[in-house]
Image 1: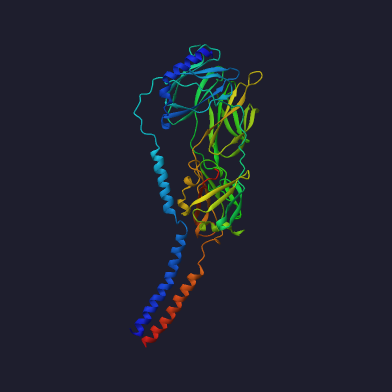
Image 2: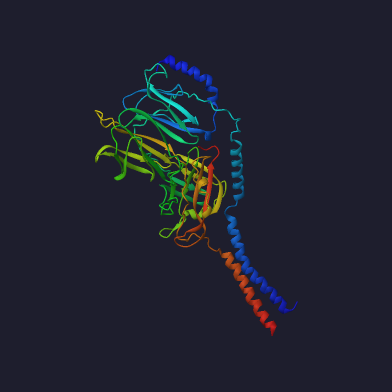
Length: 241
Length: 269
């Protein structure tokens, strides 16, 4: 091999190393989150299949009676003259994910004027979506959301959310002091524009806790991040609820 | 109504009960509430000849009834009537209900103080996330052209059998007022609950002595709507940073390129 050929080979290899190291980093980075996306999708499909199976079988057509009889109403009557008092709901107190050192107080939040979920300004606080289920409710998705960082307060603990592993413990201290134990089922990074909000904010269906923040590429001030980090946890076995 | 009549009715219901006990598909059913908006008259409500409500008292609302779509013959008789064949106070009126729709049938006074029953269709379509709806209905006598004011804002005037709204509002509390000739005749704080239609009825008779004009309230569930997204971060400082090993590997590559490049240049000579 001539010195010239050898030098060319080394040059090519070196350039490949420069490019390859960045490619490797990007690939590894993207692998870190969403490791069990396929698993989650499979589980969801299974749930959908089940729901389809439970649909009532088509009934043979029955001619409606000309004058259907009605049963006497015996209970459940309410005094409509009593104007209901506004429902006061106390938010849960704290959420902790010990495996990544997250332990944050919770405040209640609603909907921002732009229609998105309202989040506490301080990334050291987590907002509970007050128009949805509470942690510990029998059904629906209780949503906790927080900023990953802020111009005023810097990077917050939720920046460690992508490192959470399936199976990790999530604890929520309810308003009454009860400790609710959940176990992480999935960690997903979802393109914000494709965020399945109807699933994340589901008012019914099996109960779950959804912890959500931002992640992925930063698009610039005012635009925020490209993706959401979504951690879904289900009640731990043997725990209440 | 007399117990014997109720028992006979129960027997008749048992005969037809088997078919009714079958859970009909929800899509084929209408949801129906009945509101008693006639002051001072305890009544029985008969539907299709059998007793639906026994000793129904003023201001009372039934729970939601799931009924197969169709036309129902509604008749209101005095609570001490022998059976549904007794003289009608209201009706008999044929009230059609459609599958998948939600109704409140209000028994109430007409403008002139006589009795009637009005089927109102309730809006159950979703409000924006975090909002509820408010509907105001007029089922009162002697109160034509009254003005509805919500938290200081006039929503206009309406007449017996009329409705204002539904309007979507953020969850919270509003003050509802009815004004006749500029004078407040009824006022109450009313909670607006997210994903619920709060329906306020102005009922009774302000000309009665004493006035029986008052509010009654029912809430009906709305479809669900979720926030459009979750913002999540603003400074970019938590964005993924390039780890050190990437720089190390890239540096090694650059060094290699420099050395080999120079060798290449030398070899050319």
